[in-house]
Length: 188
Ligand code: IMP
Image (cartoon, rainbow, N blue to C red; front, side):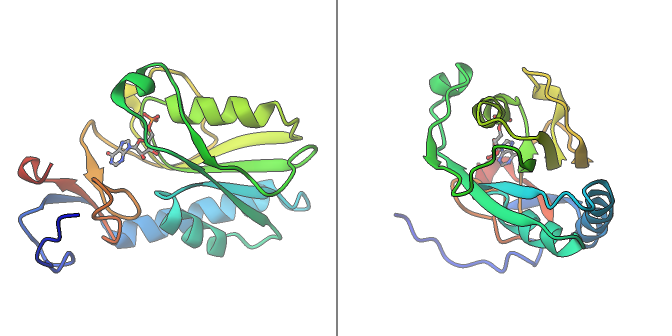
């Protein structure tokens, strides 16, 4: 592992060329999503399922913006090689602990890009016979979409750029930025 000198990621620095969405904007949008979900699922006690690790901060903030009873579970998928990715292959490295048959499931993602990961996971969950299955993603990148997936709750559309922060990484770094920023090509 290469350890590089620390930078204060909250100060403008050479790695981030632009802040696209501020921490404040993210917080406000998540509050709205929380209100919407609380109203749509009142009395249904949904199971909120997050996909690790990118969803980390979104899950934490969304759950606190939801004002009804919910249960929480996580899945994790491995990062795939470009070849496997093109075939829509995803390796499940952590499955749910909760049976979802007959449950109302809200599937929470950090970002939907091609849609291949989400499509794989939704197909997998559908075989388990949930009462309903809806998608909530904080970020949507419609430009690269290969599979059309209905997204019920969406935070922001993003341009066709690689972004980091608020859980999103580049080689496991920059997840801890509180905002969404564009990574300088030199840092890629
Ligand atoms: P998809 O299968 O192409 O929809 O990819 C979704 C996954 O790709 C996300 O869960 C992220 O891990 C990753 N990803 C896609 N776009 C970005 C980005 O701009 N920054 C960081 N990760 C991204």
